[in-house]
Amino acid sequence: MSILVYTESEGQKFKKAAFEVASYAKEVATMFGTTVTAVSINGGDSSELGTYGVDKVLEIKNDKLATFNAKVYADVIKQAAVQEDAKVIVVSSTADSKFLAPLLAVHLNAGYASNVVGLPESVSPFKVKRTAFTNKAFNITEIPTDVKVIGLSNNAFGLKESATAVAFEAFDPSLSDDDFGVQVTAVDKATDKVSIADAEIVVSGGRGLKGPENWGMIEELADVLGAATACSKPVSDMGWRPHSEHVGQTGKPVASNLYIAVGVSGAIQHLAGINASKVKVVINNDPEAPFFKAADYGIVGDAFEVVPRLIEKLKEFKSNNA
Amino acid sequence: MKILVCISHVPDTTSKINFTDGDTKFDTNGVQFVINPNDEFGLTRAMWFKEKQGASVDVANVGGPETEPTLRKALAIGADNAIRVNTEATDGFYVARQLAKIIQDGGYDLVIAGRESIDYNGGMVPGMISALTGANFVNTCIGIEVEGDTATVIREIDGGKETSTAKLPLIVGGQKGLVEESDLRIPNMRGIMMARKKPLTVVEPIEANQETKAIQFQKPTPKGEVTLVDPDNVDQLVALLHNEAKVI
Image (cartoon, chains in turn green, brown):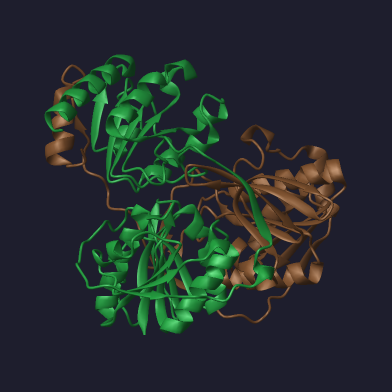
């Protein structure tokens, strides 16, 4: 048996999430006393995976798989899992991995736990900790099935280097034309912006900014930090910012290293969505704003004065530490 | 076109989350239950198909009798029929198997289920019912049009969106964007009166395994006090983020 990990790539480069799931799979493999096999579909330089503990890479090169297709990809990973006799399959929490994981679980008759935030608490019975109630709680889930699928929360485990001599093997799965029922016709992706899912730092604006015309300083602050921009629900509902930026319980979840909220009061639904972030900073002129109870660092002050000052200081910091 | 909207019965988004029985069960005491928000966007989109394209819209839920008010609300919003599978929704795989049976028996062309429920956040039911029924599937769906037997679907991807086409039958994992928040409907008195007369069929579950078990709950450890920084001294915040938090 082995631990199988699906290492996602984009433009023939591995995503950061791929290295994180590889790091996680390595420690799970250690708990089981076994090795890690990665599935790489039209992926990057497989030797990079060796850095994070992968022993073997099943390399799939196939033009038919150039565009992500959940059904087809799930079938490919299933074939790899069967060949490798994998008992645990680890995937990330990117949009694509969350899309394919339930299909994979059905194909393998496997119990599937999503949003997992730590290593298994025990191997037999197999128990993992995951978030529930949109980050308002955790639950310990037992997976009694022979094969298990784990969806690791982004940024929950981090990267852990474990230099390993990695072997490559070409893998040629059989593809069924019937699985190509969903045909992608267009992709609209901002390539110059950091996405909320990938971002290590997220800068978010709320109603306290008074209007969409005041987002320049939020974008500049994000730019200085190499951060993604986000917003609260009222801001997206009023159309100040696109829905894709809405973070919170009914929007996108955020699990960044640093989350900076400017003019966001911190409604329970907002806090639930961003709770998984490691360090939270709030800038708000209302000292009673609930966000101050959830934050690590806070500034009670006028955002229109504090943010430009912060941008200036961060620029100084960056040039001194460049 | 026959549409099924899968409805999850979940605590309202403002609920305080507590547990009982040695942290093994969710404490429903004083909790208001609602239609799962991700399902509600799908239900509203289904109403659009009903009004503009003459679709029929059924709703289904897997749960005990206590979930019926949530199904009645869906009927009051405008669904034609409700189906309740009379069993506890123990895990996503189990729920998906129950719903797959309903879908196969009902011959639905389009099934809309929320991309995840806001209680267990499993995010697996839509995908699993597609794998169990063999229908096409698009997750994190933020737009859908249907013409004849073909759907054009917009999916949210990390950092953008993707448009695809697929033949019916189709399963989508829905979310905000299918309709706007402002388009969500509050049932009116007429809808509520009519809902009382609409069929709510209770069916018994099929035998199926539970593949995961939520055995214990934990609440996050309470946060320490916030460290306040003087607005005239943002230098200190930069220093704290660098030296103490080590995030920049």
